[in-house]
Image 1 (cartoon, one colour):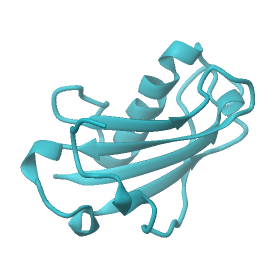
Image 2 (cartoon, one colour):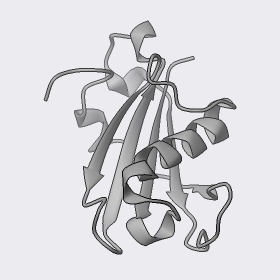
Image 3 (cartoon, helix red, strand yellow):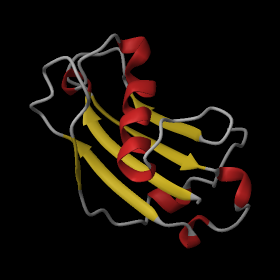
Length: 115
C-alpha cells in the first residue's frame, strides 16, 4: 500500500549516531504505519534539517512503495508523527501521531526523483 509518512523531530531526541538517525527514524515510522522496516527498494526518504547539529529541528518525508503510484501526492494517504522528547534511552523510538496541514508536504514530488 502506498503511503506518505512525515516525521518531525529535534536531533537530540533521536538517541543514536548522527549518520544512523535518518534510517533509525524511517524504520520507526514504517513500523508504526506499515508493520515493517524502511526498505530502500520500495521506499524513498526525503530529509531536511541539520542532522549533525545539536538540538536542530529536522523532518523526514517517506514515500512508501512509491513505484505503485506515479500520481499527484494529494491522492496518497498521509500519516504524520512527532518524535516524543523522552526518547533519551536506547531502544525503540517512540513516535506520537500528530495532525499536520498537507500544503507544504504535497509540494514535494512523489517518490524517487532528481532534485
